Image (cartoon, rainbow, N blue to C red; front, top):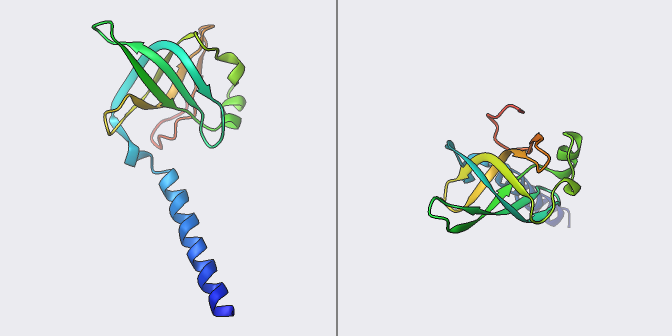
Amino acid sequence: MTARMGATSGALFVILTASAVAHHAYTAEFDTTKPVKVTGVLTRVEWANPHIWIYLDVKDDSGKVQNWQCEGGAPNSLTRNGWTKNDLKKGDSISVTGTHAKDATNTCNASSVVLPDGRKVFAGSSNPDLKQQ
């Protein structure tokens, strides 16, 4: 019985550790050499742990609308930095600065957001090299 409990505990530790490391593997998902700034119309906000997601429609140079998704920090962290989900409403025009995804999809890790009222707020980027703006 003790051997089985030890094996189960060990397996659980490995799974949880791998999950935690994978969750914080910023450089596995985002390319630090590819900064991006997108401005568009907010379509949705998912204000939930472990990270918020901001979705917006962005017009490219030809006028075609592209859907972008931008990962932000934890809701508690963002609230401590002076903003909440109530600062963002569907239809708002916002700008997001961040780091582009390595897979070249319209995904970024947000470092800052310019809110509709003009305030620039730290977006809780998980980029280990980024200093809070």
